[in-house]
Each structure stands twice: as structure tokens, then as C-alpha cells.
Length: 310
Ligand code: CP
Ligand code: NVA
Image (cartoon, rainbow, N blue to C red):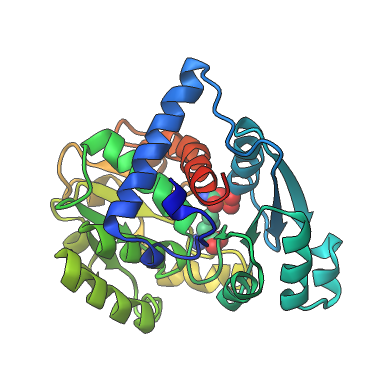
């Protein structure tokens, strides 16, 4: 565990496949401990700051509860209520907060805000979602896949919809651990080409297949895991109508999932919109494990905090 101490958690590419599996195993063990009522308090006497520039249900609640369960204290810091919202620069915020806190989580728009905070803070910085990536979510997703399928390597995950932060972190994480990730998007909504390039390099090491395709059926064919996310992410709300048109053939519904393996699992980071990116029949159906996945945010983040800050 001491090997992780002081590290940042900005994207899964910063961690090796072995380290990612270590964190998943730790998350599974912390889940067991919590359900057995065994206390584990590596954050005793420590305080974690949670900076939010965007809304959140799962990330906020799971970080606050997780810090409490690990024996620490969490501070919810809405960007508009701290001086950062009035223009105090990130470099100063980072250096000041490093004098009080033991770790910082940030949810923000521009990814450079995360890297800038990580550069100037001398305490661990955790990416709680940026426009580029959402690695905490993917660690919980991978935990959910391991719990259900027993492994990651050699499985096929199909991501249908917007080539957004979720698509990026799933591709990067998959490329790292050897999970095949097929991303199907409409034209104009492909993942960032820089991320695709980075994934190709990572996949060359792990043997994963990372592919961006147009046809959702090609992505879903024989898939073990089907994943989707909202069509208009936070910050893109004004494009909702245009996107509904662009994504109309990209709904995960009964017809589409019929091309996957019969024991596929359905994942969604949530929040979800039934009748848009996913039909009610699929998200509320027998293959959906979305609430186990949401629960695992708590356990996966406790693993990250225990390893980095504990
Ligand atoms: N999945 C996720 O990050 O949810 P919140 O936006 O509610 O935190
Ligand atoms: N892509 C979504 C994920 C929310 C958890 C967004 O950025 O709004």
C-alpha cells in the first residue's frame, strides 16, 4: 500500500495493470469489511477537500461517506463558495489547500484544472470528473465487471453513444488492463483523437483491442459488457435537441442488446435518461447491474483514498 502513498489519481494511464488490479482487489476487500461491520480507519485525523464545479449525486455522497467510513473528515467545497469562483488561481488554491488538507478531489470542466491542481498541490489530487475523463467511475465499473465476470482481460466492452469523458476513461482503462473496448459513435461525436492515439500505444503493451466504429451492432456483437452514457454531458445542455437527432440510432435497447452475449451485463455511470440513450427495458432489465455499479463508487474510492492518502 505504501507504494501508492502521495500519488495523484488523474487518469488510469498513470497506473499499471497490476496497480489497477490491486486497487480493484482492495475495493472488493473494503466492501467485504464494510458489510461485515469491520472497521478500517486509515484516514483517522485526516481531512479531504472535495471541490465541485459541476453537479453530483454519486461522487459527492460516496466521497463524503467513504472518507467518514475510513475515519477521516470530508469538506464539500462548491467552487462558487470558495475564492476560486472569484478568480483565485488554481496554483495558489493548490498551495494553500496543501497546508490544511491531506488530499483533494476535484470535479471540473477543463481537464487542465485537474493537472494544474496536481502540479501545484503537494498532497494527492483525485480527478472526480473533467471534460476529458472520469477515472474514479471506471475503477468502480471495472470492480463491477470483475465481481460479475471474474476478470477483465479478454472480455469485450461495447460503449454506445457520445465519445465523451466516460468513453475516454473506459478506453484508457481497457487499453491498460487488456479489456477490449469498442466505441460506437455518430459522426462528429468521436472520442478525442489524442486519447485514441494514447490508447493505441497502451493497447500495444496489453494486447487489448480498442476500436472506434460507426455501427452500434458491430460494437455490441458478442459483447460481455454494454455501456452507455447521456447524450448531452454537463456543460453541453444547450445542445440537447441537436444531439437527440444525432444520436437517435444509438439507443441501447432490446434489439441492440440481442447481438451481445446472452449473459452480458449492462452498465451506466448514471444519471440516466430512459427512452434516450437507453430503453427502460434494458436499464431496468435482468442484465442491468447499475446499482451495484453505483454502490461500487463508494468502495473503489475508499480504495483510492486508503492507498493514496491513508
Ligand atoms: N456517475 C457519477 O459520477 O455521478 P454523479 O454525477 O452523480 O457524481
Ligand atoms: N458524461 C457525463 C458523466 C456524468 C457522470 C457528464 O460529464 O455529464
